Each structure stands twice: as C-alpha cells, then as structure tokens.
View (tube, rainbow, N blue to C red):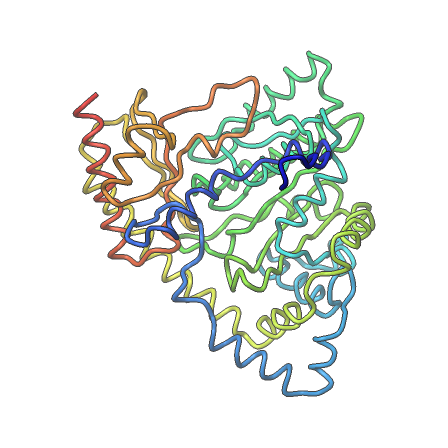
Length: 431
C-alpha cells in the first residue's frame, strides 16, 4: 500500500476477527518438513479415497444427464436426494424410527463443511454481548468465530465423562443471579471424541444436559449445538446416542456433522439436522454466502453413500486411526509415564486427539522454553492455551498440550512423542 494511502475502515466484526493461532503452527510444519507435526488435526493423507472418488466421478460424468445435473447450479439448502440420504444415515446411526419423529428431509441443510453452519447459526442467534456456553476446554476455531461475532463465552468444566451437568447447572444459577440468563443463546458441545481432548460426552449425561438447558431457557429457547464431526471415527466400543435422540420433536438441538473427517476434506460437505423454525433463516443466510454448496461434491457424496463406498472407507479409517492412537498412547507411556501423577493424558476411544497435562509451572505456550526445546528436538504440538475460550471469569491453564495422531505415520508418531518426552524431561530437569 502506498505510504500516503488511507487504510480501509473495517467493520467492527472484521476488527474482532483474529488469525487462528493454529495457522502459524501449520506454516512451520510446511516450511520445515523435517519437523514431526503432532499439531495439525488433519486427516491421514494415505487413506484419502482417490480411487473410490475417481470411480464415483466417472459414473457421474460418464452419464450425460447425471453429469449435467451435477455440473449445474443446485439449491441453497442442498440436493434433495442427498438430504433424504443424510436423514436416513442419521436414523441408522441412532436407531431412530423416522415415522415416530418430527424429522423430515426438509429439516436437513447441506453446508460447505460444518464450519459454515456453525458460523451461520451463531450469526443468526448471537448479537454482540450475548452469551454462548461451551466446554472448558473446547474447539478453539469455533470459539474464535464467536469472538468475531461479539459473543461472550462462558465455560463449563469437563472430566473424563465430558461436560459436567452439575457444573452447567451451577453456571446457569450464577448467570440467573446476576440477571444475565436472558443473554444466553447457545450451548455448544463436541459430543464425540472432542477436539481437543478426545473425550466423549457420557451416555448418562446427555439427556440430563439437554434437560438442564430446556429448564433454564424458561423465557426464551436456548439452542444446543451438537457438533458430531468425529462420531463415525469411533474405533473402540459403541458410541452413545446423539443428543438429538432426546429431541425427537425437533425443538432444541442442531445436530451438525461433516464428511471432511470421514471421507475427504476436499469435498467440503457438511450438514445439519436443524429445528424446523431455524431452517428458513439458515437457508436465507446461506443464500447470501454461496447460493448452495458445490453441487458436484454433493452428487459425489450421495453416490458414495448409496454405493457403500463411504461405509467401507469409514471402516478402513477406524482401523487406521485405532492403530495410530495405540502408537501414541504406548509412546506416551514409554517416554512420559514415569514422570509422576502430575503428567497425565486422555485415552480417546475415537477421533484424532490426545490431551496431555504437565505439572503446574511447565508452560507450554508458543513463546516458552518447552515449545522452543520441542522444536529443537524436531516436534510440533498445539499449546493447550489455544483450546480454552476467552472466558473472562477464568484463568487459562498454561500446562496443557493438544496432540494429534491424524497425519503422521505410526513410526513418526512414536518418534515425535519420543522427541516431546526428551523436551519435557529437559525442562523438568532444568527449571
């Protein structure tokens, strides 16, 4: 920009929008391929379904009528046969008898990834100064979105069973006493294998969490946004029913899912099963975004579901990620297991993440000694502080790390954890 040029006057939302901290870590990984990145939560590159996608696309484009339909504009809410298939898919996952529910394909909206639907729902429901309730810690990309929208975030403690219902109830009581309850618009949960902890909300807590939210929203409805991005990557045990299972009249829960983690992020197809009175506002807002997500990608996903290619691919992913998860847990035990009870980590039954906690005083932030030493040893991680929303009532822990086993091969995972173990031991031995 010329030195005498005046800057553009950005909107208040633009001024609230900040660069996601993960961006710098991803750039470091690209710039230095010798460093083992246990940071980025990307999917396993070797398992991307190139052959399956080629066959499916050949079937679409090799048929003149099907090819023209896929290459033409679609509808804003998404391809109807795909939305029908998505509702059937959700019903199969949860064992719903659709005839006994209020759900219809008209309640399903296809998004350009589930992130678009997260943004739109926040944009529709949250004014600057409104409150959104999330877990502590939580998915930091979404809490960054909320910050851009001007929302204030209040957080609820988690344990090994996910969000603690009593802590949620206590938060609502404190907000009520302060007169702030009318400002609460959304409760957000990653309900399976949460990013960043890998923890799943326990089956026995799900209906209780929803009941607390319903009871609290006595004067206005509070939307529960259930982010189920990792649900189908369960590779140990049976996943519990979705929160949406306790909302069969379709009033209080927006269930969001995506094919980015379970098929291919490049297709950018996500979807939501939404309360009916939110469908039209979401579709109108989405029309201002893109007039509808990429039609060819929707046709591709529809054929993947119908042909069984999607189901077979998910089974391969589960086996692959189980092997990687096991390698990471074994390496953590080998290289960090003897450091005492203050060093501990989660043991996910699915998804892509392990959350590591170190002793108080061991700072894991990107400007600290441990991070610098880890880079010297040849490994990158996500500082845990990124994973805590900007809740003004809380102090952010400085001694946590998010690790991802999604990208690296098994041998590199073991090498990366060994390097991290050396860095941690160095910092502990040289306070």
